[in-house]
Image (tube, helix red, strand yellow):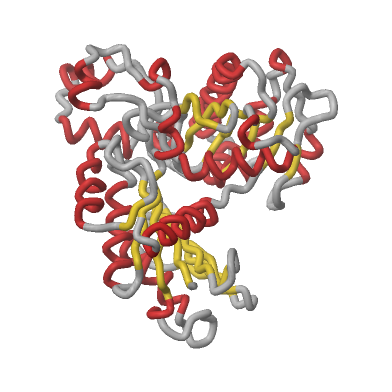
Length: 406
């Protein structure tokens, strides 16, 4: 069976083509920095063929079509025809309380994804755009949605309820949902296996740091708290999202600065975070680190705020868990930025955390690795996330149930 996985994010689309054997990867790649200067296409097949070039792509649909074209490229493709694809798995960010498990996509599922545009404005729209593009390109394939909110359904009421009138939860389902669940689920299980701990006994703090960022407290293998909330806006500082802030700021901006509702939403979701802190210069942490090295004080300040916020959450979640088997970094920034890891962990002796600086510097770009010193009371790991592999497993589970009449 050939299964294609699409992972459409706020600024990138990743794909992996699996098959025909279990976990056999035929090709993988991505379009990154969509709509930004320097948009890049990467594609690599199992035979060693590679494509890497700048492309003019401004939408998820265009990115998906370009990546599908790589699969059947006469010189570097891995498929004879797109009709060989039998299933397409899609990462979808928000399903509210209506969808909390992987599902075969139909009109109702798409309507739910569309319904939650307002709660995940940077992600659900490109998620749906990717689904509809795949339906057009792969009409013969079963389309399956795998939802980021599912892993966090185990969060207890004391963590998911906001201190608002209770009817706002009972009637409108205003609560913490959490996101990046596919990544947190894969990484927590992988970290437990690496440490020789049964996944159901693992206590860990997972830091998913990319253009979007979140941190999750995992107790006995289950999510018990996470930084993102009703929407992906809450929590850590992100590329263009503000993360935590005093809610009265929103009222102040609307009342005293005359911002409309739409202007306020755009400000908080698309013009804040690292982009806002750098005065609009950059939202990508790689660019910010480079600018800071060149003496840009705004870039330095933005990096400092980013790392400080993360350090506070690590302290809070350590208190929630009591026992922490591992602190894990994952996703683009978490896996590749030794500087960020050093800035976050360099002053955490109070928690028994001690990083080996040489191991931290020497491990950029490799697989699962440990960066803690032997004296550390908490194991420090860098675990490359494989959301596509996690999605594949959930797609195959759905197909098994679907084909057996479940």
